[in-house]
Image (tube, rainbow, N blue to C red):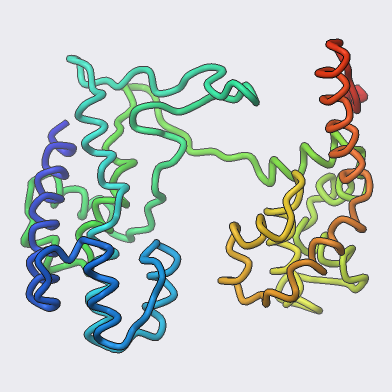
Length: 304
């Protein structure tokens, strides 16, 4: 809790400093206002419809020096992950432990677990080479040292969030994730055998998918390696009925794909995965039958 409270205090001081810098550079009353900031950028020759995270990241690639610096400051100020320290302080019990982090059957449509309060399933990763030293500075409340040694105090605070949780004596925390779980499950349910063979052999599903879609061998960092990115975005967006809109939402345009490439990409993925497409429509039909006839229906029951 010492670490948490110091992080909250440092974040408050950091935000005050960032706001002061932005006011000085822009002469705006509230540089955190989207409307005021968009107008200031426009007055200085940079037009944008939005100041969302993705848009700002793209603008930073080409924005001239003073505008880029202001956008970078705003990006730091908008970092929401540091709010998790406040959530920890609110959630901690008298003994310093957090409880009620997961809710069984939290999503009433799918039945999956839901995370509550601090949201442990959505913690920023940490890649600081000197993690222990950075943590010690935060825990001691040394804002000046952090500001001198690191480019972004909010970024440091974000990367230290996981370290605020301490396992009880004799225990340790393990960070784990399922590998391509959505792609594996949909292949198994639909009986898309070529995909299951890729997973069984330890292959790269993005390369295999691109190979199926474009009918050429695809190897990561090898032959036709440029097609792997198209296989990847297709896998992430299309497995559960997504189309062009899903590709855009997953960042296809930011990855360098052109608008006119998207629909052919959808069509190529569907033609490579006919059993999955069939599953979509069989499930759709079963759901409509259940509602219409007020009866139980089933389809694609997994074979043991």
